[in-house]
Length: 415
Ligand code: ARG
Ligand code: ZN
Image (cartoon, rainbow, N blue to C red):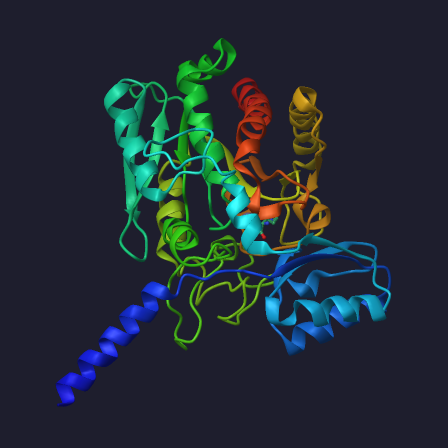
């Protein structure tokens, strides 16, 4: 009898786990144009009462007058929030009237293909298969390095692209630190393709540079966004107080850890983790970079969205010792990018250009002596945000390739 109850309970919880895929029917995403301290205070008040999923900035605490705040509100509260914005004369836009529609539109009604595609968002399974095909097809150019497992046991693969015999200068790139930023892994995959079969000037790079490319940093989180919750950001490690899952991997690096722009609260979207490098994913990447630090001349990380090219520092408003040089490179890279389709990008030190964050990968790499350290915030400026339609993958990747190639060329000539 006791066993029966137990089985029914197991069935019940399994069934609800299957049915648990989160949907977002009627959820709204607002862009509030904050003009006064009063507007900021209002959003804080709302946030105390209900859950707001912040899209930009990364947390409500970073709101300031004369900036915009993008946040996602559950359908049950969307109307009330909209009325509050109106009553308090906060200018606003509704970015998504029905978030679920946006999620479905992201895949652009194209039929689901069985195969990996550079112009589509690929599942983790497809990405794994793609890595293994590449190494078989281009054994002299592409190696796959397993740098360790994620919390849930998935292998983290770094693709080494370049001549495997020579001890050349290297560039480390990662995508998908944050799970819901799907355009980022799409870019890493695209860039690997460009190195292998792109235009001459890109293919030439691998003669004198080795690229270490981690297409998905936060694999468990990425899988979670496909199967359970499209809006997931952090990794999937359980926290000590069990209630909330996940650490923000871009707050978990050992640089001014858990200070400005991060939180020690496990339920926060910017939770810094139990300690610096407490997360296995952070540790695997940090160990790999440490063990190749003599050859790695540049570190480039890809996020979305905001259309920005950022460089250190992020954990302080002070200017980095190499500020002038990094600023010049960013200016050149952004000009290249904009030259293709006119996409406008801003650039500058992370702290003042987007918002300050301690424990981030770019500052950490810089602190190791990797001078050329950059973070991209890819398309768009928030209209579609994390739900950038598949139809924009190609153009986004093409323009970004130009910027990355510019940085790579500079690094080759100056290090
Ligand atoms: N959007 C990213 C985040 O919240 C990057 C913010 C800029 N910080 C940086 N270190 N580049 O983690
Ligand atoms: Zn991010």
